[in-house]
Amino acid sequence: MIGLGVKEHNAVRRARLVARGGLAAVAIASAIGCHHRVALEGVPADQIETTLFFIGDAGEPDPRQIGAPLDSLTAQASVSPERTIIVFLGDNVYPGGIPAEGAAEWADARRRLEAQVRAIPPGARGIFVPGNHDWADETAYGLYSIRLQEQMIASLAQGRNVRLIPGNGCPGPAPVDIGRLRLIALDTQWWLHSYIVRDSNSRCPNLTMGMVTAALRSEVRPQGEGRVVLVAAHHPLMTGGAHGGYCGVTGPYRRFGGSSQDILSGTNRTMRDSIRSAFRGHPPLAYVAGHDHNLQVLRGGQDVNYLLVSGAGSAGKTECAVKMRESYYVTQHRAGFMRVDVFKGKGVLLRVFRFPAGKHGALAYTRWLELR
Image (tube, helix red, strand yellow):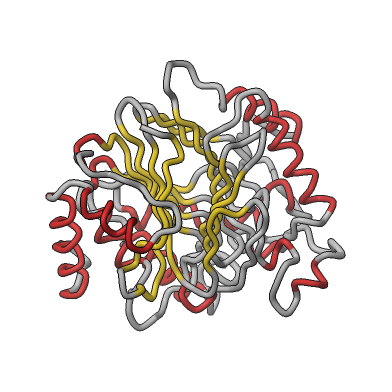
């Protein structure tokens, strides 16, 4: 396989062996190592309609080698790439997004983005969602930086189905329909940015927060029976991590709400309230985000069934998280990603993988988000 070394080839072979045996192997792993046990015996892998991988804040890969979690994600996605979507949940390029070509940081910024694009195996679809660091770390150059990232992703993809959405610095919502699945991408940094968010080159259908909220309210109500709606963005609606003011050196100070990037700020609360209001009456199955560098599965409440935080894409940036009353699962200081399988007819399965792997493997948690 192009772009994979011996280590990655071996990982792909192992993943394919698991797939040939159906999902029974996953059932054994979940019974041994997971808090929420899932019995999958007798459910063949060919009943999976769409597989999604969610990995956030992956914009600081090791410059010497591509290791976990990207190599494991590639191995799993290579088993059935034709039904696979890999979603990068923002902060795709640390620390300041894509600078202008010719800047001293340009080559390294490209290297960071290329590592993620190359992790998408041939035949799989790749989606990049913008984060605050992709908007030039929240500076005045942000709108232009996110456009440069969109152009660079298209160039690195070389004609493959890999792109940044919403594009052109627009807020979205940007829906993607595949079978039962509707995946809706949002650029939440557009809501929080303190500088220019549109210019004469903008062609955004939604130009105000009210327009975005109204459009999102419409998109979470797809036609058809048994539809599964997932919303992907960078900023979480709830978190037990540092951006929620719960832990870390700066955690207590973030409770004063001084930064729009934190849950307790007024600007962030306005964004979250608007998004939740769009969900009322037709709650999505899950809202998936990054931003905090850990892995969390939370109860969403009346407006959304589940809240997933999967921001542990860079091994060198993992952080703490606390278990709240809404928490089903939390892991901290571990890299990892989440996998969501949408089954034909009925059933949506969540799996959480963390690294370094434990004695029973990298699979740490499983849960039926929609029962079969």
